[in-house]
Image (tube, rainbow, N blue to C red; front, side, top):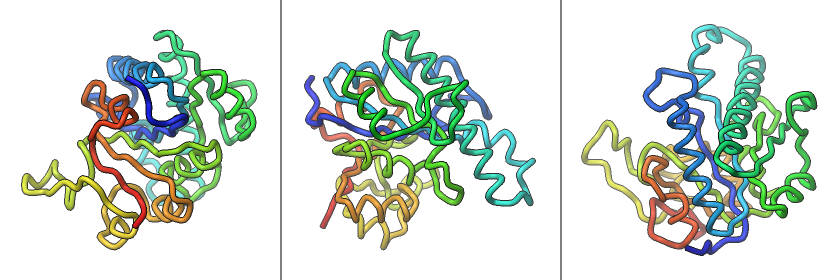
Length: 238
């Protein structure tokens, strides 16, 4: 298969790394993710990746109750770096070349983020894993994914989720939920669909970058999506 895109930004939730665990990392799931990203790279596309922190922060969420929002968000950003390092390790084991770039400088752990360095690694065929979100509190990793995608010149944001696209309600709770094949940014905002937060959707809309939403749990789905097969839901302009 051949990718229709030169460069993509893949967004994974931290929960995607939990498997069946209540929180933390599942080694089997990490290996599955590495295999899927390897299939994606085999299509010839350059891959940047943003990972969330729900798998770790969920485990300390009770401790954050009543905590200052900035302090809690800082904890979450640090947790994304832990996830990024875990992915980098399993990617290396799978034979993938990757680099972790953190927007919060921690040179003893990984490289610091710069757009030029990220593009350099991508052009060398390395998977670039962006850690620490945007380094700013009050902004989610969804917004960081769109931001990094725009900065590196990605042609599409690929969001891998637990379900196979965008629905009018949660399909895991309501069997009558209706799936959308395509949506506009305006429809997502007007319907308050929980695809990404409104800041991320607005940023994508203002800069006309497409978003594809599909299931992470179906083998080959990510590669199929970038190769033009009808997978999940496509969010685009009017």
